[in-house]
Image (tube, rainbow over all chains, first blue to last red; front, side, top):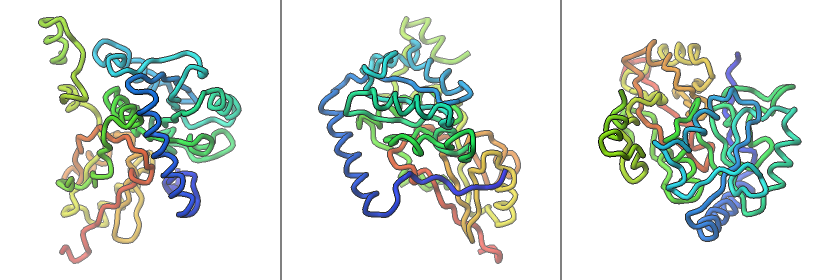
Length: 178
Length: 113
């Protein structure tokens, strides 16, 4: 394996990045005002090893009890507000992923889940796009391999703007948190 | 046996109080590494870049670039350099900005200053 440069989003240029950021901010505000404390989640496996799915499944278990926070899983993208995407986005799955995204009513959120979806494990090649943001506009990134149910919960709460992000404050240097 | 299981049997409630309160099982989760710059020489950094199975670590000049999004928390860097690398204990890593996950860690100079 050769080292590759980290993916830093699909946007090119500072100006478009700024407008994208403003649009994402507006979407988050509208999600909070429109959905309040209720949000329906559709999971999408785009070629993951199913470890992420194991952790996602645990969110509905009694210990984590996702429903107490107003999140619900739904089997249909038509009913979903948030798309929880796992896996490196296989090319064979591209059309299906696109159709799933288009079938969701707006406003909608896309959450990339796990190291594969974030572009950390697979490089873009003949079989996969390498990361979810190559195909879908990602709003929240949840790292981890797999992310624990607690990390997923935090990610979902960050997505609906009910919990502040911690990562900008972390330097991964001992004693660096301000 | 996890603490919440015993407490749950006693109280009849097993649900975590996260995010309002810290979860007792958070401390045993696998988490990305945290680095100690005062121990991190360029030799150690190069060996860590070689070891990392998911290419989360790259070297750029006198900085080690750590992509927390690519990290699988395997712990191989911590095992190979226990003085320079420790578990960060951070599991709340979700972000709306992918580039916020890429961290630059300064390396110790050759003279050891």
